[in-house]
Structures are given as C-alpha cells and as structure tokens.
Length: 134
Image 1 (cartoon, rainbow, N blue to C red):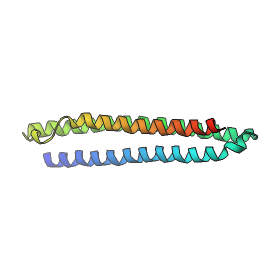
Image 2: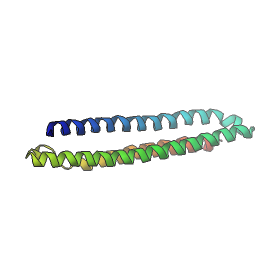
Image 3: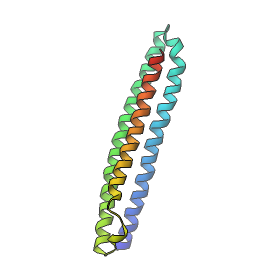
Image 4: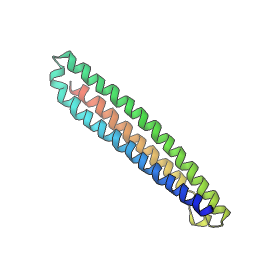
C-alpha cells in the first residue's frame, strides 16, 4: 500500500509541474503577443480612439490572465509543499529520509517566486511599452 501512495504522490507532483508549466508559458506568451499587438496599434491609436480602447481591453486581458496565473502558481507552490512534506514523512517513517534534502522545499519556493516575478515583469512591460510609445 505504501508503494501505491508513493506512486500517487509522485504522479500528483508530475501533474503539478505540468500545470505550472502551462500557466507560466500561457502568461509569458500572452504578454509578449499582446506587447506586439499593442505596439503595432500605437500609431493608429494616436488618431483613432477605438484603437486606444482595443489596446486598453488587451491591458485588461493581461491583468486578468496574470492574476489567474499568479493565483495558480501560488496554489501550485502550496500543493507541491504539501505533497513533498508527505513524501518526507513517508521517507522518515521508512528511515530513508537521509536521501532527500529538506532544503529542496525552500528551493522550490524560491523557484515559484522567480516564476511569478517573470510573469509580473513581462506583464508590466507588455502594458507599459505600448503606452510609452504612444
């Protein structure tokens, strides 16, 4: 039974990683795509207010998607911590905990914070650059 639980936790960790990767890539790609679109609309937006409205709608989309991604990554970090903590308890009970360094939990948290920072920075650039060019 212990082996099945171990496999299940590892499977959940793999799913968590895939989900986080999708969140990160979605946010970065959307931010960069919107940066390109809004930058392309800058010239027309100077004379056509409807283009400015479209640019503003893209800003709203960036903000909403980035909020969802940050929330998702935060939940992913919490989930990973809980799953790894469960593994550590299991390893300790089985007296094999010396093979897993507890400091990895801190490293995972740092990595999640860096991912969130990348999403925030690309979002800010995607919003700011077109309006600065305008």
